[in-house]
Each structure stands twice: as structure tokens, then as C-alpha cells.
Amino acid sequence: MQQSHLDLFGDTGEWSQQGPARREGILPGPDAPITFVKGYLNAAQQQALWQEAQTYPFSRPSVQVYGRSHIIPRSQVWFGDPGCDYIYSGLFIQSQPWPKYAGRLREKLARDWSLNSNGVLVNRYQDGQESMGWHSDDEPEISANSDIASITLGESRPFFLRHKKSQHKIELLLESGDLLLMHWPMQRDWQHALPKRARVKSTRLNYTYRTLIPFYHSK
Picture 1 (spheres, rainbow, N blue to C red):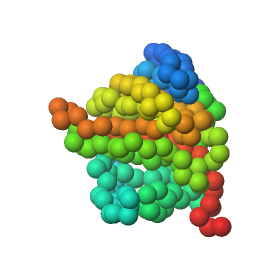
Picture 2 (spheres, rainbow, N blue to C red):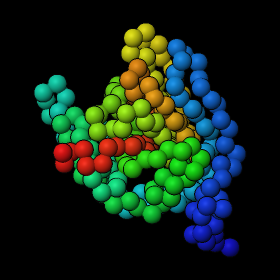
Picture 3 (cartoon, rainbow, N blue to C red):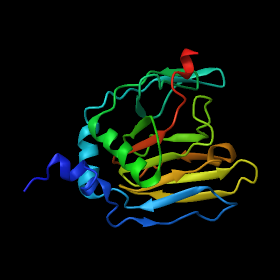
């Protein structure tokens, strides 16, 4: 019997439950401000998002890095509320309307973690040759002291955190359905990266939910 939309995404249905999720809490390091939840999304929720993502208008734009133009080594799309446009590395990204299931996940994160996000960046890594270099999500349009939620779908990949001053590193294996919450002051004090892995042949999707200052770029 096929599940109804209400059962999967309603407030009292499977979309509102963590199922087998296990909260790892704040990891050691020099006080890395993160919460790592294994298996946050169940298989049905993951499948709904994965299927929806096949319709997303992904693109592979060029960004400015140290004055030079580079095509990013992954594809991406930005969804958000009206006025929640985004600029990073010299690239202006206008928000696209929320897809159904990405919006349902936004609501779930608000219920479970009081994360009042208004935009999500979806990155698609086709295989292990696609990556993300060291960076912090510290653009000025991101609301001060706000948290960022990262959801992994598909292929497992190692994810690294590095403290800006001590250079202490933490490695996490992010698997399909996992949630990584990066609490303030994570973006101020730490960087993160997803390095290349030659042996990885399958696709990974990453949803990072953020809270922006609406109409920041209209001021």
C-alpha cells in the first residue's frame, strides 16, 4: 500500500518523527559547536527528496577566487523565500521557489530543532571527483548567530572541520539521512570541507538550510 502525502510529510506522520535517529551531541575538539544526528531521515523521506531532486534546476556557475574565475567542482541550486538572495565568491544567486519536499524538510527542522531557516543550498556531487574546499558560511546576509543544518542523501563522504586558530581537525563520515547541525559560532571559528575521493563513484546530495536577512541585497 502506498503512503499518502499526509502520512509522509504531515505533522503527525512519518515526516515529523526521527525514527532510529541517535543524537551524538557536541563532539570533542576544542569545543566544536555541532550536533551530529545519525539516521535523522528515514528511507521513505530520503526517497521522496531524492526523486524530487531529479527535477531541480542545477547549474555549475563560475565564481571568483583570488581574482580568478573558476567553475565550481559540483552543481548547485538555491531555494528560498522572496528576497532571500545570496552572494558568495562574487556570484549572485537569486532564490528559486521552494520545492514541495525540500519545504517539508524545512518545516521538520523547525519543529525538531527550532531552526527557522528561509533558504536552502542544494549541492550535487556527481562522484568523488567533485568536492568543496575549505570555507566558512559567513556571508554578511546570513543572520547573526544563526545555526545551519546540513542533510546528506546518497553516497557517504568524509567531511572535515578545521579550527581556524589551532588547526585542529575533526573528520565525520556523513551517510545518507544524517543531519549535521552547525551551531554558532561554528562559522566564525571553524572551516569545513568535502575533499575529493577517487574511489567514490556514486552521487551525493547535500541540503544546507540557512537563515538569511530578507531583502539584504535590496537595501
